[in-house]
Amino acid sequence: MTASGIGSSHVDVAVTINGERVSHTVPARLLLSDFIRDVVGLTGTHVGCEHGFCGACTIMVNGDAIRSCSTLAAQVDGSTIRTVEDLATDGQLSPMQQAFHENHAMQCGFCTTGFLMTLESVDAKDYQEHDQVIELLSGNLCRCTGYQNIVTAVTSVWHGEEAGG
Image (cartoon, rainbow, N blue to C red):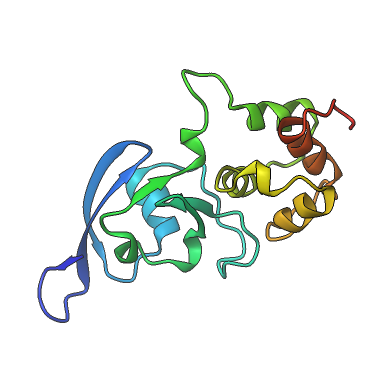
């Protein structure tokens, strides 16, 4: 992070987002979620509670899932970031995105990006038990589906279970 001067209200932030190098001078207290959405223009990262509780703003920074609404853009200077926009390849949904679609694991879809990024950040081998999947997903809130279809989508990919599991 390079400040424009001591006590400066703006900082230079340079990151790689979804494989693309991005540099901007931004307010020092700009939230990472606002940087991604408003400065970079990637609106798949959603902002719900603005306190890091609901998980809608989950992205990956250097391979780890983080809450972008409780992180300053300046804190990730030099990092590699992945957002939900990076999951599909050549217009094809990722297996997890496809499973969410096939298993009706979304109604309004607001929470979906946070769930997908949380799932992207872990190794499925560490979540072989049904209760482990539920515990992993408990950090993301969904107010529509009651989670069952989300759990079904995850297990259909990770454990090869059929839709309706």
